[in-house]
Amino acid sequence: MATSPLDSKKRLALAIIDFLSTSLKDGTLTPEDQESIEIAQSCIADTFHVDPQNQSHMKDAIGDQSLLSIYGVYEKLKGKSTPSASSSAKQTPTSSAPSDTPAKPTGSNPESENFKSAGNAAMQRKDYPAAIDLYSKAITLSPTNPIYLSNRAAAYSASHQHAQASTDAELAVAADPTYTKAWSRLGLARYVLGDAKGSMEAYGKGIEYEGNGGSEAMKKGYQTAKNRVEQEEKDRAQNDDENEDVSETTREGGGAPAGGMPDLSALAGMLGGGGRGGGGGGMPDLSSIMSNPMFANMAQNLMSNPEAMQGLMNNPQLRGLAERFGGGGGGAGAGGQGGGSGGGGMPDLASLMNDPSIAEMARNFMGGQGRGGGR
Image (cartoon, rainbow, N blue to C red; front, side, top):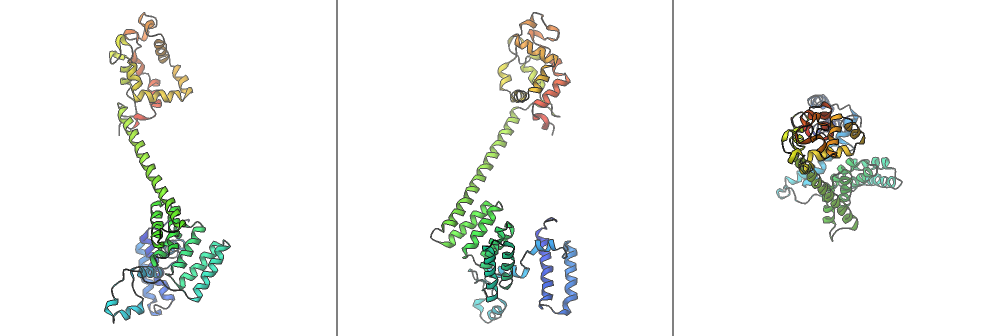
């Protein structure tokens, strides 16, 4: 649809405007009422910021139904009597209380049955738009007939209009909960719309009203929806676990200062820089290095990016560091390449960590772990 969907209150406002307009056309209201009705429609439209001339919005609001037919379903669901029965109820006090059992749905008549039959024929030849139109004509004559509503729900599903199918199926089960085909069609529509739990509930109701454990088709639909619900719950639990693991790793690998810079001083300490944390004789504390998540993440990123590794080794200070590690630290201690070395044969890591290229490398290969440190 070209325009965005309306919210429920705006749709209801449009449905009321449509009801008032229809009441003028069908003779419910007299021509003398027309001016008052038009003023009322204008006030509703202005107040709710809706446009009754927008056909797309009107269709979104009421679809192929009307406010009167929707309210008729509500009355049937609540066991309310028709207007003629209401007048009789005044003479019979015991009949005025609503019944817990839904009233019988609106019956059919020859004309509505003809539309339904023609709709069934259209369904058989897979002409779903024609079927929807024909069932709609039958519904106009019998607004709360669950068979007509359920059949149109099937036509909507076949034409991939699952939201409309769900609405019709809900109206059908409200009009007559014992009509189990409507529960099945409601289950299908909800499942396709992604409401697996709602689908399972609809199929469950269908099984309940069918009795004897339900039909094979209804049980199959229920099981399919149940499997989806269980899978969704499993996926949610797995995602929660993964998020918890990431949070735990972030906490363990803390030490990243604000602004996205990893804690290079801690890394220097493990490498023996400045005499902190190193092993005897200035050697790096390798056990601390390999168990540190920051260093492990950095190493993993380097191993997966050969070009970055090559560029990194072109840095003179890091290349000198690698040569000293490769030589076990002895050469530097003897004065071999001692220009930038600290005590015990280690390079001057304070100078190394101040190198802008090393700082940029650290930011890149830490995988962004430190970026949230200052928030």
